[in-house]
Image 1: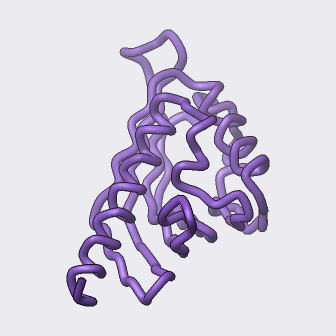
Image 2: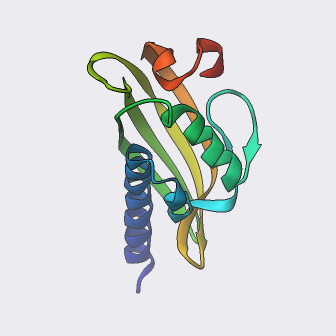
Length: 152
């Protein structure tokens, strides 16, 4: 297979990984985080706090998302640069969160960008580093059980 075709296939797998991640969040399928992230990942979810490992990622996700009702994470404007067995993706994210049991009530929206470092592993492409950069957050942060100081 030529290099250009392989790069396209790699980009497609990474893009699908980002889409899979959004669905994992929205269905709260926490046991499936390993389908997208490496166990030894490091991340900063926009707070300036460096975290490591799958257990900390799961804790970070559940401490907010298990407290709210329905969510929808939209990931787009994806750019992927592949370099052999490593890649970088940049993707915009819009995340809407509803209050539990109040579908017509207020929402909390987060808008920003995921900057991810990927590695090809035996199981496929996995995120080994994520930096979330939030451009705006609007609405009631209590919907996700947070105060404004916790959001970065």
